[in-house]
Length: 147
Ligand SMILES: [Ca+2]
Ligand SMILES: [Ca+2]
Ligand SMILES: [Ca+2]
Image (cartoon, rainbow, N blue to C red; front, side, top):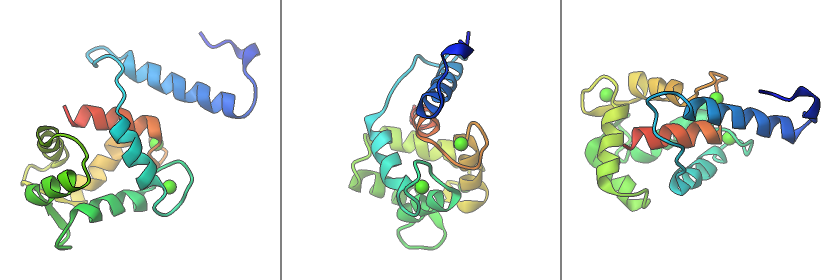
């Protein structure tokens, strides 16, 4: 239950909202117990500052992440490119990378493209559908996608 009288303005409300988001997602039946990923936090912090240092990943910043993986800049990311950058940036073990790649290849053509894969993936990350990806959204979905 929310204790309305104890709510104070500002960061406490934001922290409270994030806590509710966390709890509502974690408490969802069938989901694994709460997990954290320091790697995902590091990626988030770097990615969200790419254009606007505002604590959220915008669609433009999300495209920048995609561009990082598109080594030959042909607009598509192959699994080979994906694994190469994953390894190069030390994002974790390669079996997780492969699982991640195939989860976000939403049309299953073994290539990641902006349409439809990245736009769907952005939508998937953006749990509260406010057009931005916050830290909590990012970490939770990142963990789900790499397992
Ligand atoms: Ca940002
Ligand atoms: Ca695809
Ligand atoms: Ca969001």
